[in-house]
Amino acid sequence: MFDLQLIAELATLGLCSGFMAGLLGIGGGMLIAPFMTIILAHRGVGTDAGVKLAIATSMAMIVFTSLSSLRVHHQRGTVRWDIVKSLAPGIALGGALASAGLFAVLKGHTLSLVFATFVGFSATQMLLNKQPRASRQLPGAMGKGAAGAAIGFMSGLVGAGGGFVSVPYMLAHNVTMINAVSTSAALGFPIALINSVGYIAGGWGATNLPPWSLGYIWLPGLLVAASCSIWTAPLGAKMAHRLPVIALRRIFAFLLYSLCAYMLHKGLSGE
Image 1: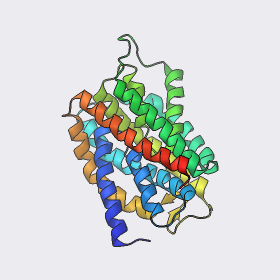
Image 2: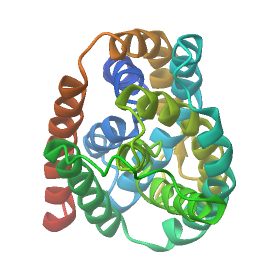
Image 3: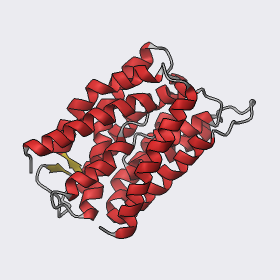
């Protein structure tokens, strides 16, 4: 199951997802999970196991891509570390509940529909470009804790670094686009770390998994794609500082819509 064609497919996926992770602060998971589902399906892995493996493996990759893109954003001074610190505790709690609990119970088709729903919602929010009231600011400690828990929980269900929730959330509270993208990259690391541990624990002893699976994390996919993504994530991060805000919003939205369509089809068709 680990041949030259597979290595080429995973390497290409890693290079593309790494660039998009740096560009949009989405951790790459939104791009990785659908395409890795296709790769696994072509190798005879059923939908239920395939979707879970793709989601969990894409999350584990974010441990590497988030650090790679974060370095560039931090050097540019655009990471809001105050937001990172206030959201991180809630993210840890929400991620643990999702990845080690509900994720293992839900069927792959259900997870596909959950993925599609929230990705489609996020894309619409980005494309509409609604401007919040100028006076609207981030909430207090309890509000941020609740928001962090929601981000961590949804990330754990769909295998994404949280950017699909955290970026629109920050924009709705008058955080600038580049600060939101940069801060989302920083949030990707705790989200990925907590959820990856949960996927390993939740999938330990699960049946119908392919060889070289550590819980729900598929090691060949992780090793090849992650080793390639770390090279392109900094390039995407540098591009994020050059593109106009409206271009970033449109790229973000249309990418998410395309992935939403595929996962919706996957969940409804039962293929």
